[in-house]
Amino acid sequence: MRLRARVRLLLAAAATAALTFTGMSAAPTASASILDIPPKGANDWSCKPDSAHPQPVVLVNGTFKLMAENWAKLSPKLKEKGYCVFAFNYGHMETDPIPQAAAELRDFVEAVRGATGAAKVDIVGHSQGGMMPRYYVKFLGGADKVDDLIGIVPSNHGTKNPLAIPAGYTFCPSCLDQRVGSDLLKKLNEGEETPAGPDYTVITTRHDEVVIPYTSALLSGPKEHLTNVVLQDKCPLDPFMHDQATKDPVVHQWVLNALEHKGPADPGFQPRCLGGA
Image (cartoon, rainbow, N blue to C red):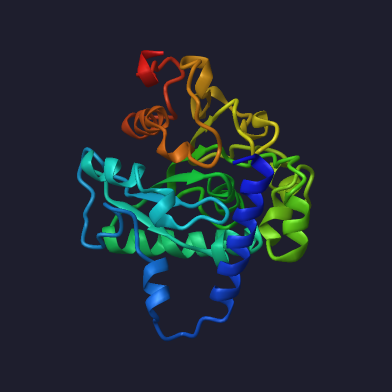
């Protein structure tokens, strides 16, 4: 499917979902329970972190995404590795303004910390979900509650994709927030892009068709606390684009590398490439 047609379908689906959420009553419904199904391996609220995996992992969706689809591959892999994994849907299919979404993340992190007894969490986010937690860290008290912040194709400096504008002015305020040069991103990126507290890992792809240019994902900051990863620098034939990046086995290796040792991902790490390429 051509890019414009695919994005139009995504926008239409998100608009329908946003209307559904807006009209939803407080009482649970069948559709609500379907939408709130977590990915496999996530949201075992009895899970307690062990010494090898001391921080629970919070997965944060990208725009127009539901947690069950967005994290279908990575969540069970993290669980198999021994992590307590948590995921949630937020912001009317992630269309609410970024500050509101970040407040929802703050509250969810507090719920995870309370249930697990962990002082900090690790956050793995896709697209908006890789950028928005930086607002939580910088402005909503998250700096001392996040150990690792791992962004998969995050919209850290916004996108020049022209489809963000009509979506933003109709049903998706977060799309406007994610445009290059938006007031939100000016505020977020003013001064330090990687404020003290977490270690930051950014994973992006040269084939990104949503965050344009793909280099908008990259952050600046001290190397001891930041690693920027472009997938094709280590795996030149990696074909993954933006939407399905969370399902890339190479991305999974980078995420685990960042989680498993002190600091951000090791820039010298060589993942096993798809097809040995």
